[in-house]
Length: 229
Image (cartoon, rainbow, N blue to C red):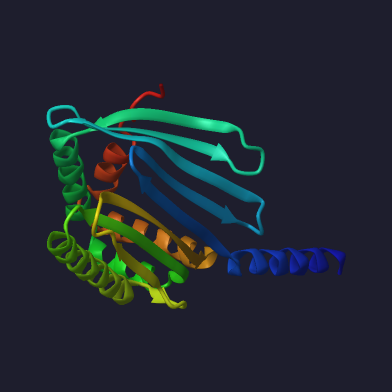
């Protein structure tokens, strides 16, 4: 009886944990020369809490590309767990695209799997504020209209992919008499752990059904990453 009670208690606790969501908070901002991107990930009732930060995002030239430095931080203790720095240029983007295309070719209906998983994602907060100005009213008005079109299109695409549970706050503020561009935003997304686990199992099945899929995914995903600086 004691053994059955322990098993029942274990299954009960596991059921609670698996039904809890993984929460992801994304924040970003750009002001003059300062850029900041943060991704907070929290799961298992706060027992797991990490933050990914991008403290450096600097354009260094058309040949060199964009310098990006990322850090992984224990959000509870504030300790730096890992970090690396790399330059993203045209060649880097092309290589990433080629690798992604190879992954898609070695998985049965990867796009369909991704769509099904994204339908399980809930968004309970979405804010995006932008202030722009080109120094004269006509040009600024055209730019403001273009930004509204871009934001509306992105919101429409997002609504087709995930479940939006809050009224999005999209703001574009014109500054007619000065040259300025600042933007900041935040979003809170969540998905239950059970859906992540079942999605992982389904992905593995799709990969195994593809000829050479498991070997290809293992080879590409275990390639040596850039060394930390």
